[in-house]
Length: 399
Image (cartoon, rainbow, N blue to C red):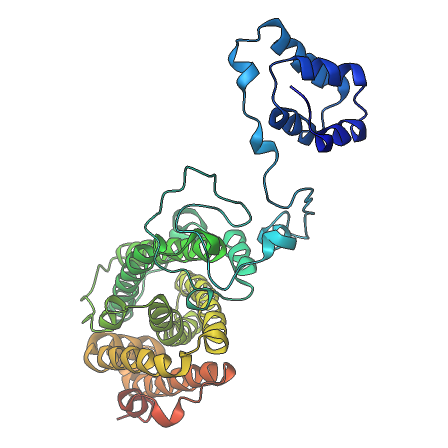
């Protein structure tokens, strides 16, 4: 076998002797194999030891061993440096490994930054290939936040310190816990159903959504435990019209707008209000922790919406339909799930004797929620006030 001129040049650059090169040309090795050995940056001594194995048994599988993986068409020589919080996603999203194309070209499990192996390409179950349908700038950092801030309801909540509450307050807390548990369960189920559809190239988003699915499961867990931990019990299930927009989403962006923008903007304000008003410190801790998680989900939803508005060619037209459906579903839920509104009034007011003040607090809550939602859309250049759902507007006005 005669080595090509290019391979010979590489042997000289590797400081391999002419004696070793001659032995390789006299061996069963092919030029392609020698180039792969060179790509492994082997010293002459180590290359010689491998060659001796081949010379000792020219018919062995070693002589036919393919080492072509040592010469991939990817960018080599990458050295990621740990940041202040360790070696996170932002630290490895560098150079070509941090470039996410506008359209992902592979239908199989080819990871971002790699290339498919010729002859072994089989399509997967993906259907989301356009970056504008899924991306959010800074999602890698949000993923790292979610990992660092994870908590366990069984051990991080001080259940032994939960104090006895008046029956009216206890039952109100249990009713709201039931609703949040139900919402968390459906949230996890719907997001999980979309995970396999997102192309592998958008792995940062897939990883973040995995944390949100886990967060939603944890919300269900902690709220069920709270309902059963203090002499109360599970309350009435929510009406469920909220989920019509979730289950009916035909595009990933529509689902993310419905859950992580429209719903989360309302949920965050409600949880933060409960984290301040709940009479018991353990309840305040529970509501505060879940609110913090939901803030992160809302942050992702807003970042994705901003990217969608800026990069999708039909964003404005499509978004009007997405928001109409999501707002309508949320409005129906808030209008017709009466148990939650009265339970919220009991907690915010401070008991049945102060229910009138509680009702006023709920009306203020609805106004604050709507204002918060509209401000979020304003921040991504979507003026929603002229077209916002009439039902949400009437709730904010106390009607």
